[in-house]
View 1 (cartoon, rainbow, N blue to C red):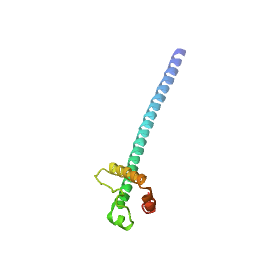
View 2: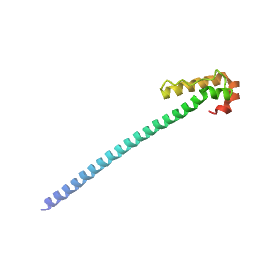
View 3: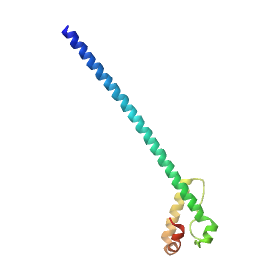
View 4: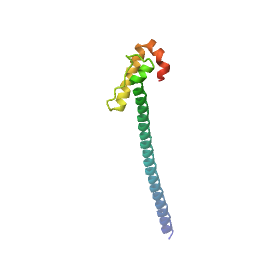
Length: 119
């Protein structure tokens, strides 16, 4: 009889341990799923923020490229113009590179217009 009681207690403890282990596994899966969802959401937000930043740059760069803005603010004719190919990231990146090169090569002209264009 004593062996039977010990066996039942051992089975109960084993059953409880297995149950706890399964609960921990489920919790781990839920945490991993939640973490992946958060990572995807963060990545999506980062991409959206990146696109918003490029969109704002594009608007500013198109403004700087307009003939009206250039004439009104005495922007030099060799100041870079935005070339819209439809690839937002590439176009803003190309303009950034061209602008930095122009500034590096035209420090005097840039100092005259930097308050107008405010990067």
